[in-house]
Image (spheres, rainbow, N blue to C red):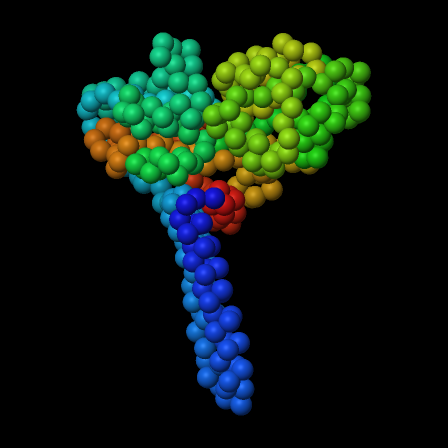
Length: 346
């Protein structure tokens, strides 16, 4: 809960604490004159309602939630020459590389360096992207999550919705898990795949480390805050997670949809509560393992950074997104965005 929310709540409590005794006192001495009391109560109720509305609005404005899908721009993208660096979420690395190459084809004078987990000075999670954008070592920090309130100098540019999928080693022979079963696995209540209709194999739950946006999305929308039992060292990045699940008998993990389906050998993507991971099931608001993706700049974006961010919402940048199994925000429905926005504002 953010500091200004606490201030609102304290103000509300003070208002209620002073209003109720005052109304009781007035009622005691003016019992026959009910109308003034009713008027007072109406005014007090109005003030309380306004305060509650203020809490909601302040939360949504802080998070910058895209409740209404933005319009998609058309035509030749705006070209700006120069060089920028970006990095952060490894779930976004493949998309960022493709978008950077696509933008460069339109605008040869632009160089966009994506600091992937396989390069020197690698940035391997959303938290590092936010930190690096804040300290100025990169121009854009990519993140699967909203920046925390103590990074108020970062400006949020929401660019897409990404779909994540729970994956298991194909040897377990399980294709569907319920939400409760996944929670039970990561809480240590299920220890053998035979308990879940699979083969007699020990379950090996794998997870990303703290600061990972994919991990945060999994914890928030799949585990719902349930206790997480890590039985191995935290996995560094997306491709390492996929490789570890592929090569570890009995393993279960999670990653973004595109990277999973481009490395499917010995992997089984499982449906959650019978619902498959896909852009369609996210858009129609039936699948819950997804998040809004962000590009953060320190202060308002300018120059090439702003032009590249704009390209994410251009018809050509959108084509790259769709081909990479990401969802252009323009394609989302407002109800799904509103629900996800509300979930991120508490």
